[in-house]
Amino acid sequence: MLHEKIEITHEQDTATLYTYILDNSPDIDANRKRPMIVICPGGGYRFTSDREAEPVAIRLNGMGFHTCILRYSVKPSVFPTALCQLAKAVCKVRDHAEEWNVDTNKIIVLGFSAGGHLAASLGVFWDKEFLTNKLELSKEQITPNGLVLCYPVITSGQNAHRGSFEALLGEKCKDDEYLNLVSLEKQVTANTPPTFLWHTFTDIAVPVENSFTFAEALLNNKVSLEMHIYPNGVHGLSLGTEETKRVDNEMHIQPEVVNWIEMAGRWIKGL
Image (cartoon, rainbow, N blue to C red; front, side):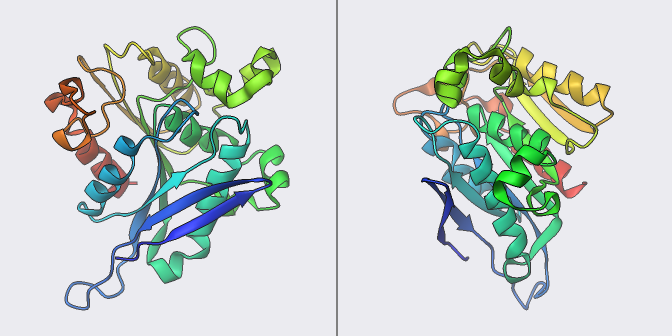
């Protein structure tokens, strides 16, 4: 495995990309190209969660995927800093695709909660000039081929997770123009990548309507999607296993949801 720590700098802010890149074996397939999953942990744009980082990367490695974790800039950094860092991370993967044996048609961005908002942001903004001009990169360099959104923050309107938008926008949170810009159900187009979503019906922190509004926008734009709504479970479940529960908190063990990652894996392989 190639495990590296790579700095991703945008203006005065630096993110860190941790790679978990599988080796090819001559006994199996020396020339195998694998999908790459870029993981964006959640944390309300105030921190990046350990529970939604390495355990997820290792689990996906075991399913045959390359992975990397982006520890992006959070508060006091504001929009579009983290988005620019994620775009640069995707570009980095494309630049190293031959060296890392990456299938360039399957570079997937996976995000949890506010990290889901970040992943979806790249999904809706990758072809916008405000982003490509700021980065001096082409659309082709930064486009993700698919999105996996896990209980994502989406809307800044009704059912919003207000804390995420306050951290993301800072003082601009008072500006309706910026709030509308980062309300991602309003930004979906036919160019948004295919999307896999999952959520729990009983999520209080980030209501399930966030996933439904994004799914409706995808449907209206004829973008392929798969969505799973589980009847029970708190916010922030990650894998839903013992491995990713909070300290002394059994609420994050939810056996009903553990199959989400296997379904997402099949969906990615089928893209």
